[in-house]
Amino acid sequence: MSLLTLENVTLRFGGLVAVNNVSFHVGEGEVFSLVGPNGAGKSTIFNLISRFYDPAEGDIRFKENSILKMNSDQVPSLGIARTFQNIELFEQSTVLQNLLVGRHRHRKTGLMAELFFAPKVRDEERRHREVVEEVIDFLELQAYRDKYIAGLPYGVRKVVELARALASEPKILLLDEPASGLSVEETQDMIFWVEDIKKQMGITVLMVEHDMNLVAAVSDRVLALADGKELAIGTASEVQSHPAVIEAYLGTGERIGDDA
Amino acid sequence: MRFVFKRSYDADINLFKHKPQAMWYLALLALVVALPWMLDEFFLGEATNVLIWAIAGMGLMLLVGHSGQASLGHAAFMAVGCYANVIMLERGVPFILSLPLSGVIAGFAGVIVALPVLRLHGIYLAIATLAVSVLTEDFIVIAEPWTGGVVGLVAPPIDVFGLEIDRYGTPTEFYFLCLIVTLVVLAGYRNLLRAPLGRAFVAMRDSEISAQAMGVNIRRTKATAFGLSCAATGLAGALLGHYAGAFNHETFNLVLSIQLLLMIVIGGLGSIHGAFFGAMVIGLLPQFIAISRDGISSAFGLGSVTIPGIESGVFALILISFILFEPLGIYGRWVKIRTYFELFPFYRKDMFKRQKSYLKTERMR
Image (tube, rainbow over all chains, first blue to last red; front, side):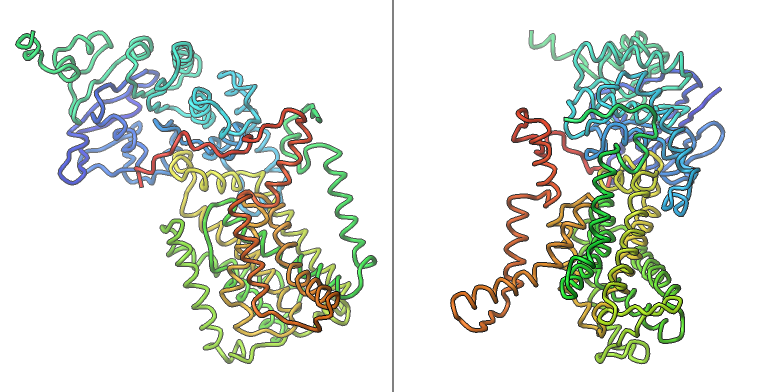
């Protein structure tokens, strides 16, 4: 069953067409990757799904329902969680507090109950904490639990972003370049984690990534984009060997022969 | 160094991290309760003043320090609380109702002001709230039948179930009234910070975009922050009315707004401690200047020399030195000193340096 569907989505910034008539669907339990050169519109698609941008045309559906009528703060309530390419953590808070913000969509208590810290609030806090601790165990963040983000190295911050998204118990996880800036070992960890997220947790993953090792290792299907347009869709190897994709990354190749 | 062994999640949920910490705060509370028997009437009045500043400071700290929204107009909400309280008292509402209601009214005033200015950020928000402060002053003058115009109002004595509370007649009772309000506001504030809404405030301050992506409704959360902040400030305003006895539109002028902001910056943004430290500085400094001036002039036989503007001068000097040398405020300095001894000899000078190496993009605004 298709969990997330984009149908003929177009987004223009003035004269620039950032996303041009893009359609794809992400099936339940799938790892779906978006690849393409810089400026292809990959992150823009994420921001469309997060409702930071309004598409000029087309429709975005979660399960059967269009999300275009929702505000960006209502999207997470569907079970759509995301990370950001340029790490958007809450710097002056600890890792634990960051992950607890990830639980915000499950908030059940109102202002008054929280002002008086009613017993219900405490129960909820314990429950949130249990979920967060599971995520901490899964991503091996125990050592950083009470550390402030401002003092953490880049690689750990990337993991904390992933953890915060997972803490919201999403149905679909949007990962914006999870491996950018990570070392080889850290990327290897990321491969295992994405596989486990898919297999153990049963969470669907939509990913933007440049590292083809990661993409090839975990993706069920890959969509290549360039200049906002779809180039090719298929398995990682199919897309990598597709002539249009090679052209987009490397040029047409005609000039090379001339120069040599 | 102390190692706290946590045995349940409650260790992170409870108000105090460990027993000794709770004991210290209990000792502080005991000291504050014993204060009327330790100080004479004048200094007890000053202590009351500090408490009132601290309540207003907590209000502003919630908004500026924890939610990241600037406000240069909080004197306006003090005025709303103050006038609302006295107007209700004059019309026969008992104090036990009029005080909380004045907080509620100031809170709603805050929400009403917040709604149109929610889209503004930083300096623009500061200017918009500044305008609110100026407008409120004029409005008080215009609404003469209610507010007494430029003549102002006189706060009637407080009567709580037959117990008469008056700033000059019964200073101890008035002190305890202010202390109770302080503790109630403090408890609410602390509770909020360990609950989802408090985390949403901080999240909104540090990254609106990702707070939104976590499901935080930015508009509603900002309005709530404004409302709660203005409610606490309104309570402080109501108490200030009784403390000052008589007040008019000039009591709540722009200088008060700036002093409020100064207070939390000097105290240390982003911590409740900061509100209290700042209140001590702002509340006690004028008296400190006056006393030391008298001391100096009598020591040198200068007679009673008054230097106009010395108070503002010293305030400005203190603020500038804080921004230059200790942007984290008094509380920040205290945390550094404590960490130095906790980690001795491993404290590093740049331990509290803010890292700016991973800049956030604001490209989606």
